[in-house]
Amino acid sequence: MKKIFLPLLFICLIGSASFAQNRPRGNKDLKPMQRIEQWEKMKLMEALDLDEESSVRFFARRRDNQMKVREILDQRDAAMNELENEIKNGSQSGDAFYKERVNNLIALEAKITSERENFLKSLGDILNPKQIAKLIVFESKFRREVRETLMRRGQGPGKN
Figure 1 (cartoon, rainbow, N blue to C red):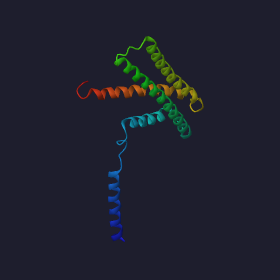
Figure 2 (spheres, rainbow, N blue to C red):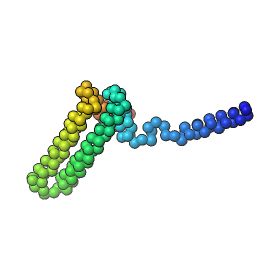
Figure 3 (cartoon, rainbow, N blue to C red):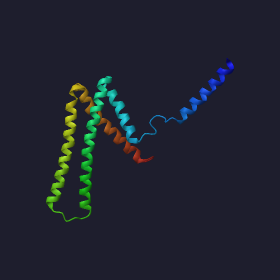
């Protein structure tokens, strides 16, 4: 019995060790943005203290909202690039052209704000008012922390 058990145990140990070496460790294989999003999600779940059902509903609604906002941001970026190219090329476009482009950008910014407002108002069936307030504060603090961390990393060693 011992003659069979020891080799079998040895094979299992070797197999599990080699599997562990080939398996991706943690989040190292994820893109930096995905890692930040996972970190944000984890901290957000902790801050809002949601049960499982509420968490699923909240993150599904949040994902839908983020997709809508990304679409508007893409439109804004395209409009901004078009305006930048127009300015860079030294076009002789008139005031009406620039006024229209600026008004378009203002409308897109308003649309982003409106989507954000609609999202927060829609959370009333999932979150209580205190949790919505926590969400607003969390998102602001999280963005600031990420921005500060990125700025510190961009400075490099010895540039403090």
